[in-house]
Length: 335
Image (tube, rainbow, N blue to C red; front, side, top):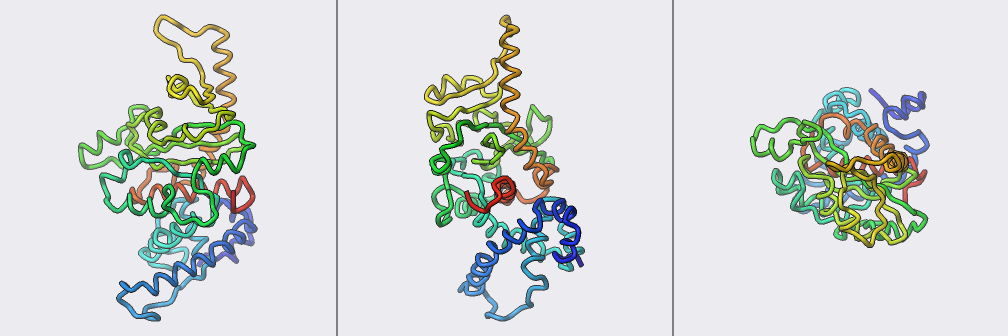
């Protein structure tokens, strides 16, 4: 059976399997433990629980191994059957641990991005699961989330960090299995990727911190429409420069109070001049940090391969992965 003690002997493998160093893992474990125990106590005291306290089997794994198993799932995206084999658990227990416990606790301790946008009309899971909107609003959305002193909105985040003089906005897509329903196939089909995809918008900084991560939407939604729906532009201070790509045509006119910088797009009968091409190339170079940030997120294979999980768990998984990425970049568990 794979254990934390065994994996510590090979720090390079530890990092490749989890995305964290052993020291970072220990710090995260120390922060997770009290919240995990509190959540477990609440579960046992739930009046709707049918079994009496103390009934049922005890956990086969200690908390370090359970955290290791969850991080390996996000990082490697191996099947839960294989995880169960590696850790000596039944597949159902693996699922309950990752989706039922860790997905609820990890966002509370990690420096997760803000998520304060009204996306109920665009959320991919809204039409497929009535429970997704309630779960995401209670655990990851807006002002309803009980996060103590943790930063909950983009406005608070930018107020706390006035050193951010520029932010980068871009969207990324991930392939989904082809839906059986014809209407869903049309809704999810991305003309750009020629695949059925889920799309998320990433707002990052020059040092690759992810400040905002929206809930996913169908791949057919345009980048500009998604930006309007998230409403993040209204929280950008006047002094902060917003860098975007050519896909956000007309953004400067729509938000004149924001300092938007984007490459110029050639039009029919009006090709770009040599100077405009040079400026576009320079702007594209300046936008590299957001591409790097998205690339770092996709080192966690759950966000890179075809997503095979339930739609209502996608947003929480992405939030945890972005929190793990920010933790590595910040070197600490708080903003």
